Structures are given as C-alpha cells and as structure tokens.
Image (cartoon, rainbow, N blue to C red; front, side):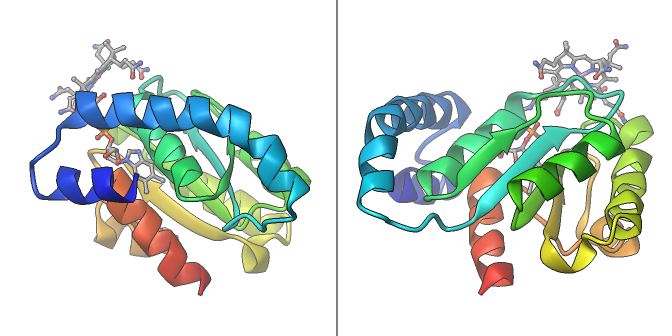
Length: 166
Ligand code: B12
C-alpha cells in the first residue's frame, strides 16, 4: 500500500485502482491479523473514523480507513451519520490515538467542531489527535476548530498521522 500511495500521488494510479488494492489489503489483513497479534507486533495506533452526523458520503472515509489499516493501524469504522457523542464514546472505549472525521457537505462541517468540543468536554482531548478531511475541509478550517491536522487524501493522511503521533 506504500507503493500504491506513491503511485496515487504521482497520478500513475487512480481511485478505482487504489480502492481495489485497499480491498485486497483488507482481505489479506483478515488472514494476517491473528498471526500478527500472536507475534505481539504492536499496531501503529488506533484510528476511530466516521462521517459526521447528517452526512452519508462514505467513499473517501472508507478509503482513508483502508489505507490506515494497510499502514498498520487498528481501525474502528463508525460508518456514516455519526453523532458527536458516538465519536466520544468510541474514542474512550477503544483508547484511540487518532480520531478521523469526514464531511463532504458544507452544512455538516459544523458537526466536526461540535465533536472536537464534545471530546474536550469529556476530558479526552489530551489523549487523542484529531484529523479532519473531505472536500469542503481546509487546513485553515482544521485550525479554526482546533483539530490537529487536515489531509487532502488518504495517503497524506497516513503520513500526517505518523508525524503527529511521533
Ligand atoms: C458520490 C457522491 C454522492 C453519493 C454518496 C455515495 C457514498 N456512499 O458516499 C450520493 C449520491 C449518495 C450523494 C448524496 C448527496 N450529495 Co454528494 N457527492 C458525491 C460526489 C460526486 C463524490 C464524493 C466521493 O465519493 N468522492 C471520492 C472520494 C474518494 O473522495 P473524497 O470523499 O473527497 O475523499 C478523499 C479526501 O477528501 C480525503 N478525506 C475524506 N474523508 C476524510 C477524512 C479524514 C479524517 C481525512 C484525513 C481525509 C479524508 O481523503 C479521501 C481519499 O483520498 C461529490 C462531488 C465531489 N467532487 O466530491 C458530491 C458532493 C459532495 N455531494 C453534494 C451534495 C449537495 C449531495 C446531496 C445533498 C445531494 C442531494 N441534493 O440530495 C446528498 C447529501 C446526502 C447526505 N446527507 O450526505 C455536494 C456538496 C456541496 C456542498 N457545498 O456541500 C457535492 C460536492 C457535489 C456538488 N458539486 O454539488 N453524493
């Protein structure tokens, strides 16, 4: 998936090919996961990801989740239309190192800010890094809602996640 990520960046591969590669990786992980757990290999971290409340777009979110899994993260995918409180509960339950939120609609972007505030109110803000993405999101928006990072695509999201966790 590292190679796929590089080829996607240089326009040698496109979304359908990336999705297909990620699906293959996903199937391989089903077989490899118990073996990796048995050898005591540590995961790169746990990503809790979902599309925010009111938003049903999930293609990009799924891609981000699959690429993170391929990069060695444990991924908890909450699906679409996820309420701020559901994100909070999942971050706490899974002791997430990264919370990823996706929004494709300008009207659902405020739910990202609401979720950041809910994470803060629950006393979890210091233990989780928050990343946002989706067509209307920008680095400036991420900063304005006090998220830790924005990424324009799945491969740069993994690079940024590794950087903010190191
Ligand atoms: C497919 C699609 C749909 C499908 C969704 C199917 C699905 N299962 O996801 C359907 C038909 C259901 C749909 C419905 C609607 N849609 Co729509 N849709 C799209 C479309 C054409 C493509 C989105 C997509 O899948 N892109 C491909 C993926 C791979 O890219 P991506 O999502 O951007 O994800 C990448 C990055 O953004 C980033 N990323 C994404 N999430 C995350 C999260 C994190 C943490 C990180 C770090 C990075 C990251 O990495 C991803 C991979 O590289 C876009 C147009 C567009 N150009 O985006 C409109 C678009 C998003 N839709 C739009 C609209 C208006 C709607 C509807 C309101 C239409 C209607 N009137 O009913 C409804 C809303 C339904 C709802 N409540 O959510 C508008 C939004 C406009 C706006 N300003 O808000 C758009 C922009 C189209 C347009 N130009 O008008 N839609």
